[in-house]
Image (tube, rainbow, N blue to C red):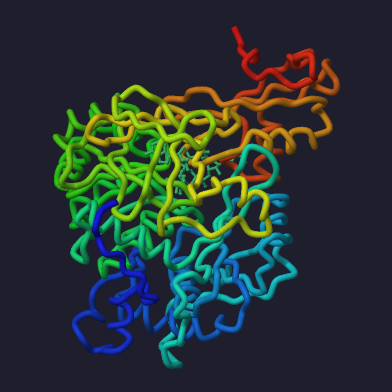
Length: 499
Ligand code: MCA
Ligand code: AMP
């Protein structure tokens, strides 16, 4: 383990505290957040977030309608200042997904941007509008001093059943962001650009809370577009965060866009994560810009585990070395015997331990217990090898029923259940297949209720998007007379191939 001392201080945002204490000081005038033409300095963020923090301080738990806007960032900062756990909601979630999250996490309030229409699944909740223009009317809220107290509850898919809420304590946020600061030489002078959604760890914790913890700033694109990346990197942004689909789209655009190549060449750090960035895209970007994208590896439950370091060798196809404070081991099939080899070929499951880990799955003690070994290692389900110098190379994952599409983790079982609720579907199985843009695309194999008029791909895609979320929709549908099953009646997904 690295000797880096980890700051477990309850003050997650020292620059914000400083701006609160000295509203006329130079720190208060530094930029903090920018979304399009709307922005807040640290002083303004303190002034808008602290009254909101005071208003939510008594709530047991709040939900945030996490549109990619300034309001979402302000609401989450306010919740953290108040010490009230926040549940970020995907604003594109369908009824059944939202209904599950709301009944599971039981927030007492939902925070949303003024004028936003909320769906019926949230009708029973008290609503509070996030006013980003409010002047400070109250003193800074006292907040919580307990690093173990829950900060965020982030929903993540498993292989079966509805998504589980990972309870992320303040301690994990502080330590993961400080470990990344060490690995990336990330400082308050950095200006981050990204267009990631704000209801997951990547976009919200790394992409919004990260710059704020450093006292730096973030410019959010609203939605990812290569033109926005080029503009911000040529106007002072120093770092880019993205999922592989975004870097793939950059690699596709580069040959016809010299301005994008020039902008990327100026960046201090280009970071990819959430899924593997194919070596082909690494190479195309390096060739066009002279810059290497570095990868880091994390998970909702563990926050960040490894990264290629800014001062290390950027090696395509690897996720670098364990971050300071993170213990990482590979285990054999029994899940407990450690693999000792650093030979670039012995495969084992990645298990991690450290202050970056979540506390539990909300209301799911059995799932929580199953996720850890007896001696406290978290089983990631990711399979990897280690190079002789410690670089980790992810080679696959244990569960074939988890699909990574566009950087989103999606459980096959969840989509199968949704498909089975469609009247035109008698049986359903879901698999992932390689996709150059998304990494994997979702494929549905269905036995139609009426073979004469099977449901179309659009119909099933709409059905899943409405119930769950658009990114969970099948992109391809195959119709079969029957699903291949073994003697036990279990669907044999390996036999699901089309020729
Ligand atoms: C299309 N759309 C539909 C339908 N079809 N909406 C409803 N019903 C339909 N049938 C809409 C979509 O909502 C979307 O709307 C637009 O059409 C295009 O959809 P799509 O092709 O699916 O997506 P895309 O816009 O091309 O998205 C690619 C993307 C996205 C931007 C790369 O996948 C993305 O943002 N990925 C990031 C995932 C992420 O952050 N993962 C982090 C979790 P509209 O255009 O209005 O949006 S992992 C994590 O946090 C761990 C810790 C880690 O390691 O990082
Ligand atoms: P999620 O559960 O949505 O937080 O996604 C976590 C999963 O994303 C991990 O278990 C990995 O399978 C995958 N992942 C994250 N970063 C990387 C990366 N750089 N390379 C390969 N896989 C990654």
